[in-house]
Amino acid sequence: MDTTASFAAAFAGLYAAHQVADHWVQTQHQADHKGRPGWPGRIACLAHVTTYTATGLLALVVVAVVTGLHLRPVPLAVGLAVSAVSHYIADRRTPLKRIADLLGSGRFHALGAPRPGHDDNPSLGTGAYALDQSWHIGFLFAAALIIA
Image 1 (cartoon, helix red, strand yellow):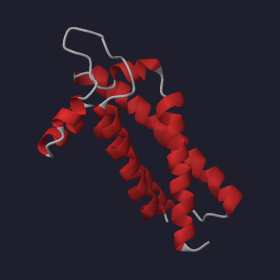
Image 2 (cartoon, helix red, strand yellow; image 1 turned 120 degrees about the vertical axis):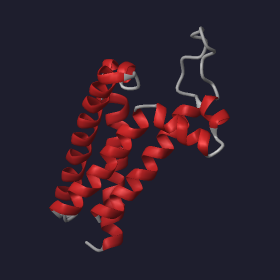
Image 3 (cartoon, rainbow, N blue to C red; image 1 turned 90 degrees about the vertical axis):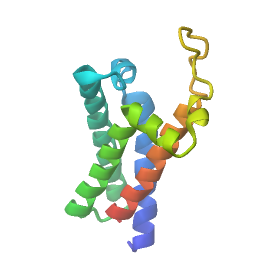
Image 4 (cartoon, rainbow, N blue to C red; image 1 turned 135 degrees about the vertical axis):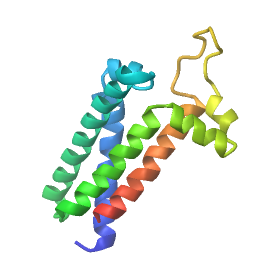
């Protein structure tokens, strides 16, 4: 399999795994606690990132078996590490908000968020969610390039 096809296969596998791991595999406890301060938040986020990374590895193994994608151990480990570390950073919430503020996207990040003291917009349709997902997909792209 050439490098272009390897990249495409790795990205497709990682993207599908991302959708499943971020929305189906992640537990409610992890989702509710991963952004909290201190060790409880760190542990919940680490648990989510662990299952997220395992889901990505499983998807890549399935892609390799079905398509003949050659998974080399070092690029695979580095690519999955890039995905895992970037995912942890984003899902701790505060770093992504700080990055959005630094880049002038703070208002977009806050778009659709509940007002302080209210639970008036519990939805996925927020700027924070859009920035979170685009961050993850960007790093999946980088991870797929490394793996290929």
